[in-house]
Length: 115
Image (cartoon, rainbow, N blue to C red; front, side):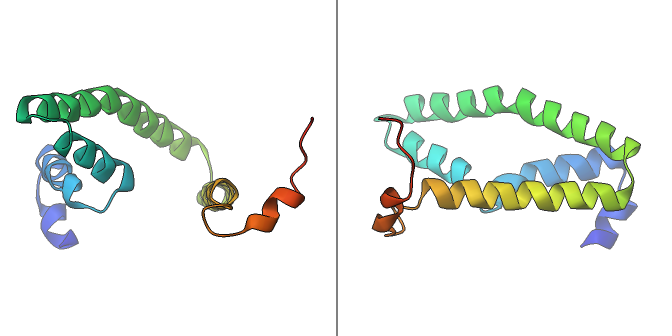
């Protein structure tokens, strides 16, 4: 698959990847599609999904362009450590926020409440 993309021109390969990316498993994207399905009408659902796409596109572009900028300035090993650290932090935040949903009811005992 990668050999096929390497033979294509960059804009064509990028467009093909962009068109197939909605097929990848993505929780927020499937949540938006689910909300669009339950919106009540086809027009409202399409409007909701298109609005989500149009409003997230600039943010994704900004994140990708800044990542490329950082990637050019950092050593590969340092960038790898930063990526792994951010992945670990994201996993810890998700586990922390889902602690009660995962059935860890005793988690409320060791959480400090200011009141």
